[in-house]
Image: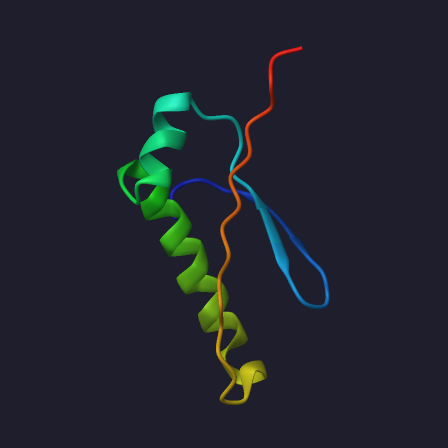
Amino acid sequence: MDEQHDVISTTNHFIVDMGEVTGRVIDQLKRGEGELIVEVNEIIDELADQLKDKLNDKTFLPIVIIYERKPA
């Protein structure tokens, strides 16, 4: 992972702030394409590796939520 992202960990979930990106990059991510999907997959793999001992044969189910703010 080239960039450092803010990761907030709570008991049951992780929130990763990917920072600001252009609309084009968001559209690519929604289609499962582009540079951001690579970063998201790397983060998911990294978290899965860190949690593998704690999962105890449970399924690791990553959920990616994309939101865009409407202009004020």
